Image (cartoon, rainbow, N blue to C red; front, top):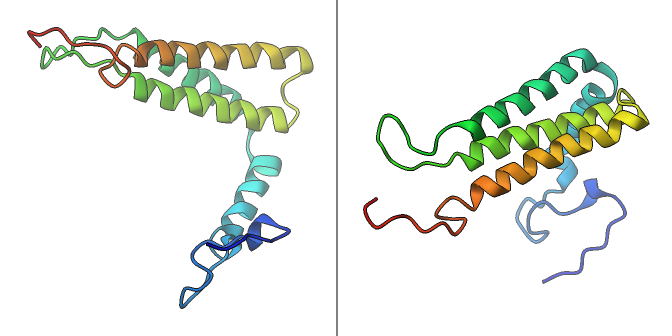
Length: 140
């Protein structure tokens, strides 16, 4: 084990510093970080982002509103993970909009509440899954 001493995230080891080709985080991700920073903070169309937030929120709710029983198989399938993906997407888009200053101080709390509501609904759905602790009926 080694002690990590660096002043910048781009200088962090990406693999073992003793490897034949030691790599730093920046060797792998610097270009990607620069591209996304430019897109996120300068180029992304905020009207499109606002629409994508609405779409991700609606899709999350739609997924959670589906019956647990799969019409094709009759199997009980709670779609907590696909819904959570949409929740995370909405959260990420909110963060982009917030960083760009598109959302006012008063709107900010409402958006946070909307994302929080989605996250809670996803968590409630997850506890209805086997992995979340739900005990399936013996006949299933």
